[in-house]
Length: 325
Image (spheres, rainbow, N blue to C red):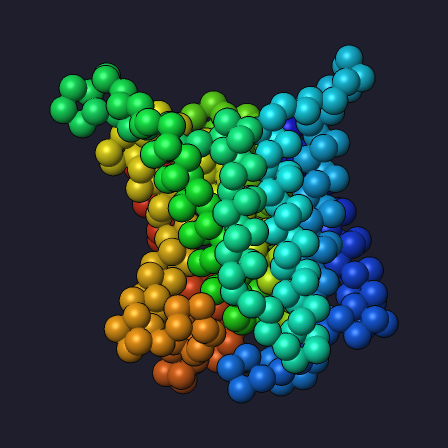
């Protein structure tokens, strides 16, 4: 628990310093998101919030994971796989964000291919959804075949990356939901005795809270696709490392509920687009936060409602984790 607090504090301090610095860089270089009819903001916004979050997260987790007693670095494969995939998501997101600064659209298929490759980094490092406890015989664990566990892991990671990317459409929304989800995953990891996942989740909490200082309405900087895909990837990886371990039929809902707001919002949007025969990847204003604003709520009220819904999902997730451990 001590390392969790240290990780959260370090990542917060690093991000609190990096975010305004990256904001100045974005303004100086013209790396800004230009307003469109779909977007909530009315003027150009610096887009390098994702860079600040990545740097703060990586630096804090590396420092906390350092064995100061023996002056050695713990470079286990799962952490390397997660870090490599997160870096790939960030790089592709930066390319996408750069295209936006030029009022261009980065094609969907290279992003999708990169997401599969990034998810494969986790699989190659041994971070996979291994199986599920037999609901009939109780103690008997059903181990998935290698191809099935790899497939399920890749589908989960790619799915969470995209639902978080979909969610990032309003000041403070994606960052706040990520902070709530990360807190839930940290609690669940602690309950399960998984210190590694707890440290990673704690670091993500610190990063997102510091970022929200500059991103909550009215935002002075946004995370861009580089930030939203990075957050989605790390949250998905933490869930596989911790919450999906020794899963029962009931406890598989723990990570799903922990990330409930982006998951269920994205499911609604995708199903609606399919029904209306529109491209699934094409952005529009059918997401829950846009519908809440259309009903007359302000941005702050809308984001607050989404936070409350996320908290309800996360409390349910924690209750299930406690009762099924």
